[in-house]
Image 1 (tube, helix red, strand yellow):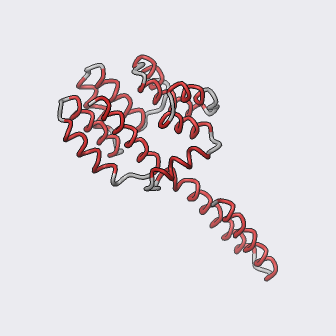
Image 2 (cartoon, helix red, strand yellow):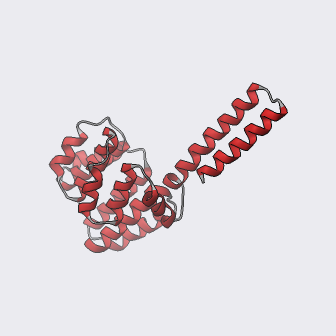
Image 3 (cartoon, rainbow, N blue to C red):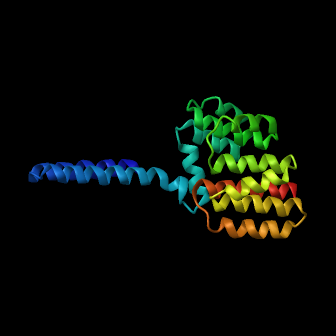
Length: 200
């Protein structure tokens, strides 16, 4: 898809050059091209409603973090660990480690990582998960209350229902949420549902 944008940009630039267009027209064209490229790269990760298309995007991506996500979601845990070692960007590596350590229930390692990261919805979400796991209810409620991302709040609510034995309610909430999600959040919710099916 991105190569089509490059081709369109080249043809338009050539046409404008032949027509003797002014500099501001080239700048406008460049801005549209940059915005289009940005949206093309972000669309599968944030808004794509077809889970298979998001999955294919991760599979074909050359980004180590995306390759880790694919391995984490669809392959063996050992493969995800191997892909994790190839992530060079520090923040992305921490995100990957938190996901993997949470799945492995390495709560002490998760807490240690969270202490090195800036406060965000992601750190609040995982802090809430650890607090829930360690039965620190007041801290859990505090983290959950601070979350601005409603999808994270929904996942915590689903987990509460599951732990309280309300299996049907947990799946009903999750299924309703899945119908509204796209991109990586959609894959994450489907992964979570698959995990619940094996633990509920």
